[in-house]
Image (cartoon, rainbow, N blue to C red; front, side, top):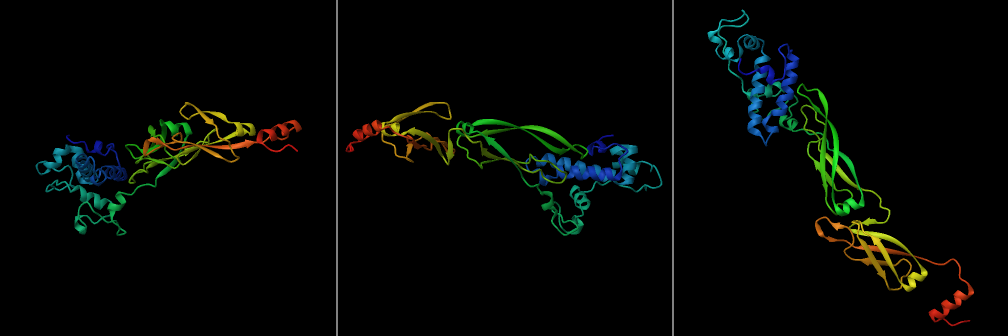
Length: 317
């Protein structure tokens, strides 16, 4: 039989006119060359075949001849006796232009309407080209990350489920694993976009799927831009005599910070290059800021007060 028009439209031989319209609409929208700029040649060939199949099967006379004699019968019908009196012997099969069928099907003017091929208007006078490129609104989801992940960087695998039409235009659910490479230094609000990974409906370009970075609270560090902040309690004695603060960094390193100067309440100690990585300059880091909370004793004995006065050089009353 040559080309199988039923298979091209993914229909069986008992398909109704409505079945054919639905199949053509779905496939023509999918394979229109304007929607496939990357593989335009393949799309043009498929679009032409889809249009030719619809042109033949949607016409009762052409369909009858095709069912009886196949594609070759259509092309040489003038040499074949007509199967019924409904089909004249003068019939000639001249496949219509694919773009004209597309324009006619979607209510456009086609070549006869003076709009031109590849650019149509619907019954409301709107350009069909705009409708062809209509895209669903983007879908955003939170991507919750630990401070360690944002410090070191990591790869996350996200399993998504989305609805797409099957070969017959009915929605089906498919699952997919998306890989996200989290870069060191990414901040809350950073967006990672996966184009057209949202739900898909016939005639509408699928929505973009956007993951938005969010930070989990950390038990030790707090982020402030590119800096890391830690609140450190020390006793009054340590504030006066000194102390080495022992920290574990977000990448697991042991970091001793010696405090040798007298610490005043509310004072802040800056440790350079021990903050968060700067995403645009990965070799650089922000600062680590240690905020001190000096704990004062609740009471002192007379002897302790006297010793303190002597140590601090105050006169003894």
